[in-house]
Length: 305
Image 1: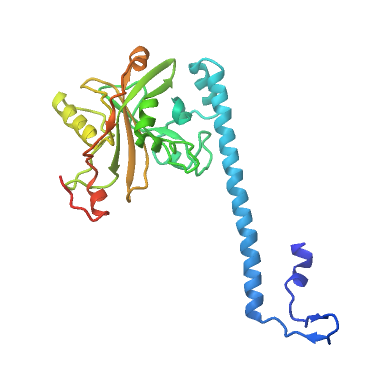
Image 2: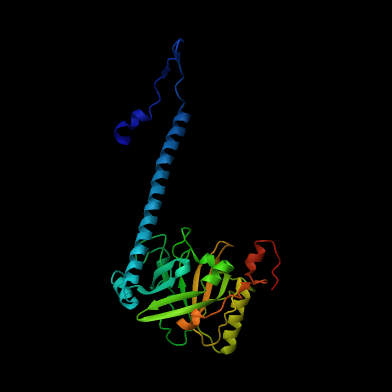
């Protein structure tokens, strides 16, 4: 229609006549050029909007199908074999992350470039959803003295990827879902969350950036100082205690609280029995949260630290 008949559709140059009952024929003035342009612009905008919206929902549906298909493979058999099967489609698939209450049940990729899986899915194809990915500096096996491995994911508005991590800002949700499961090779690891915090991705407190991604600690004192910061910054007093020598898992996504905000979930490795019997009923909202300096300045408040 648009090709063959478009000239007629937009041709308002001829006079238009309207005949009313029991009246004389009235001749209307031709539509002005300005009005024609407005009509054409509105029609084109409507068509483009329809295309964009349709494309958005098609991408969303394809993305969810991809995630569902991968989850079906993972749940169908042994985790090690499932990960191996999935990695046949993309060698960068190295593990699997599962948080049942948060509806996180996704493959974890890893490449030499931490920026790659921000805008590529688990098959390595261009996607605004990206994929969960392990920091290029880490290994699931924690080689050397690596006590903290970090997994990143996009904060998607539809709740996929790490879009549901924001639920951990709610005390009751934390109490109901304090555990994380991590799979790689033939290993199955369980973690219990001890800190939920907001940090800044840029220089902030006294020109320094608090680094929840820190992996190596020289001694107990350095670890204790780092751990103390993670507790003071946590939105929730979880009552879960970590200590020097614990293996830490850190999950990171973007937050909307201020420019460069990051939501960080930190958990310590434990065994399945301890995880099942970890008591978080006494967890409470932190009454004196230490936010990054930018959190205060964007609200017109004095930085108290």
